[in-house]
Length: 181
Image (tube, rainbow, N blue to C red; front, side, top):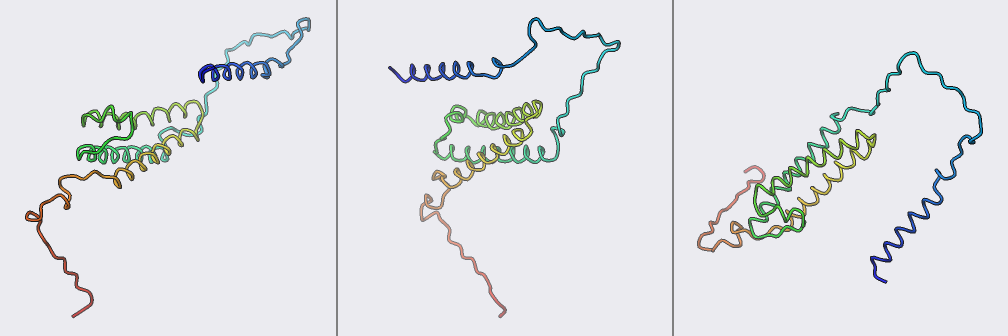
């Protein structure tokens, strides 16, 4: 029996077991022969209740979170582009598909930022306010980690001092005067 059949059997068993003991099966309602209360129609229409979202979507905290997310996505773009141009390799397989051109790479990181804002807005509209902000925070952390990794693992570029021939390198001296003389 392969892994696929085992996983399928577990999934079907879990759904079946959960469905057999769900609360809706044990919910109690009026008996079929019980008298029901007469419902009178309202003389005036009832206005729908306004939904309370707790806060506006474009509040100060979301502005700050989305600005930080966009700034770190821009920094991630710059570091990734520099590494790819100097012979480095993109480790993220999704970004790797877009990394063949600067425009594709820019579109990837712009889409990432737009996706974060879009998913956060969906969470806001459905009342998941902590998740709304957590999504932006996770993206900020991931982008900051990618920028840090990219800066510490840069590929050797032709402009590094180690690759410049000795006869082309220019020596310079920095003199710092300490104290008074």
